[in-house]
Amino acid sequence: MALAQADVLAGLKEIVEEVAGIPAASIELDKNFTEDLEVDSLSMVEVVVAAEERFGVKIPDEAVTDLVTVGDAVNFIVNAAK
Amino acid sequence: MSRRRVVVTGLGATTPIGGDVTTSWSALLAGTSGVRTLTEDWAQTIPVHFAARVAVEPSEQMERVEIRRLDRSEQFAVIASREAWKDAGSPDVDKERLGVVIASGIGGVTTLLDQYDILREKGSRLVSPHTVPMLMPNGPAANVGLELQARAGVHTPVSACASGAEAIGYAFDMIRNDRADIVVSGGVEAAIHAMPMAGFAAMKALSTRNDEPQRASRPYDLNRDGFVLGEGGGVLVLEEYEHAIARGAKIYCEIAGQGLTSDGYHIAAPDPDGAGVQRAVKFALRDSGLTTKDIVHLNAHATSTPAGDVAEANALRAALGTDADHVAVSATKSMTGHLLGGAGAIESVFIVKTLQDRLAPPTINIEDLDPAVTVDVVRDKPRALPAGDIAALNDSFGFGGHNVVLVFKSI
Image (cartoon, rainbow over all chains, first blue to last red; front, side, top):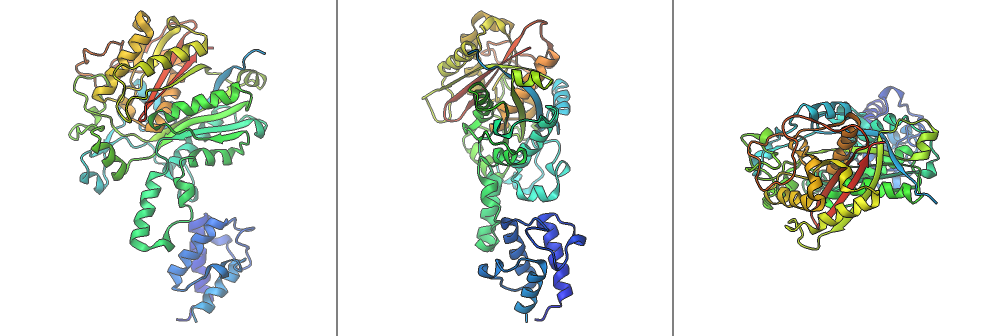
């Protein structure tokens, strides 16, 4: 099932806010998970698992290291859902 | 070299009778019970339907994002430590001379059990990556150490219900032995869950007075039938005396000594002779340079179990002799329930307040004093303590036969 980029971003914002306490309004495509949003390695695992559940996609462990920015994650999820 | 002295310069607590020290202390003097019927569905599936939950939920005292990464025991440690640190004046201290010793009897047991439920119901993928840092017994100490950037050492002694007192003793030694100038110390517990409660109930250790929960914790009463499980924690900032003086800190009192022994008798039952307790009192007094004549107050372990309360009272009577006649004994678990690894810590906080206000807190729920109790119990109302130099004892015992006695004295 195809997912719209805007919908994935909105969903990810909710997940990151829930997991890391970052206000959704400050989460943008170009934000770096570790440097800008202070999502540490443990919280990143939570984000990934929550995103898999929400969007019905698989995000393999080896792919997670490439998800540096929010935009990387949105693109990965959109492509995985195609 | 003269021995380094250790003083108390900060206090923090979250207990079943208050969300901080001031509220808890007022409730204690007023004789308030923190015991309530549990509202969770599981409570009706075990023999004991009540416990002493904290008066103020951590969600009212911390950010939501902190809550979800910390086990409840860790939340209590962080909350009490923040209060204690602030109370100490947020001291500017060399981090390499700052330590943390915070104990827990059981650690993150609710995290362990909740995550096991997730594992069984939803599979391993959904087990939280925070599980291990949340369930480890050193988690409360580690999180406080991280927040304060303590680098002199972060420790977690574990000795069941003696853990909190042992942590304070360990912190005391860290300062005396010149490893640190300030140590944040105490104990926490968060074990109100069907599984540990079913385990304690199976040992017949818990009161089953389901129809009168607020009267269930009744140390020294003839009809006591077991302890009431409580949760929460207490934290004391300990500081080397000259260090505290140099920064103009408010000094509550001094920790003068400690005595540690073990029974070698039974895994859970107290030694009826109380020889281990007597030796711990003797060692603590010797360590402090005080005698039985100096002691005016004791916050007893007295959990409200049929065997424990009398064994303890007999041991104290034997250790203190006729000087026990001028020791006002308070059993504050009658109000807070038994916080296991947090017990010795909140009771040490109460002793510090007792010395400060010169008021020994009451013991509630004694309708018929057990005639086998041979110590002078403060009942129903607080009792004034004498002016001048006074000292008080905290005794704590744990399953496994651990005995810890701490000596606090006015300054």
